[in-house]
Image (cartoon, rainbow, N blue to C red; front, side):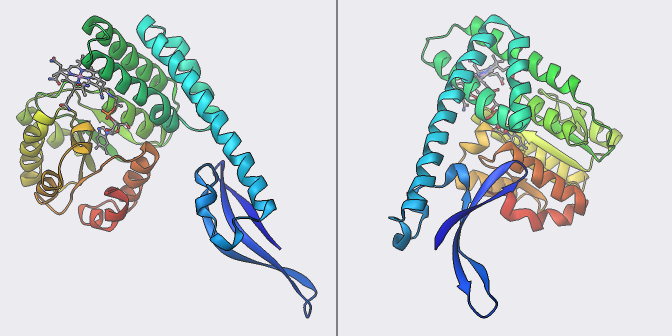
Length: 305
Ligand code: B12
């Protein structure tokens, strides 16, 4: 008999295609994994090997997963609309409420990844298309930052882990991502010095010297600021032997050559492309465990997605 076995890990369901066979000698039923199917929400009929695609037991389970998936999409769309309206109205409490419910049922990282970030991308798109006034765009981004500060302020973190600097290069005024990453790292017990937005590179060097972080995160949003980010990385890495991670919209949209040029500056400089926040936090925790610049090489697989 073939069926799908569900394993729960940290609140998420993972599926395995399993065959159960009667062992007549031992008089027990033995289960053999045919295939690990992955996270339940991502499993589709294409994940199933061809010989089991018509198995009624499997089809019925997949139908229920699809239904669950569709329900999730409807709920996510409604929450995005609610958050978009609340951003426009400066209704911080409403967004904090959505974030709180998300945190209970999933995680804070997923609230940022599934709701707040896409809504802000929509804000940018509407502004670009002249469908949202610049004043309203400012209200939305100010409300977003106030909301994130409120969420971060409510997090109780007792751990005293390593100290991380998060910053933007000189000229970069976008810092919502820095505030989001700060809140998640704070939740995990790191001490975060958020220096964003834009400060002159020399001031940054003085600040690093004073605070001695174990890692520096640089967020770049504007394509025009990639050059400024490269100058910052070069300056930091000629003076300090500290892991540097570079990410952000401009990095997500950069070419392979631009990415390679940044990573070529020093072995402990890495870029992160289009990575979910949970993976970013996991990567930072892994580097913190190793806690030295050389170890960053070992995390290549997790860093470059
Ligand atoms: C809010 C906003 C503003 C606000 C910023 C306020 C603030 N305090 O941040 C204000 C109004 C000031 C602003 C100004 C401008 N903006 Co603006 N802005 C936006 C908007 C709508 C949202 C940005 C945002 O917060 N996104 C949400 C965050 C969470 O997403 P994210 O940055 O991608 O971050 C995620 C990942 O990339 C990653 N990540 C980010 N950083 C890092 C770092 C590390 C180390 C790692 C691992 C990961 C990581 O994790 C995050 C979470 O998933 C975007 C639209 C968009 N598509 O993003 C336009 C946008 C970024 N802006 C744009 C432009 C053009 C401008 C201006 C030049 C407009 C003008 N003519 O004045 C100025 C430039 C100001 C400057 N010098 O920096 C363009 C940029 C185009 C480009 N690619 O170069 C965009 C894309 C709008 C558009 N559709 O054209 N902006």
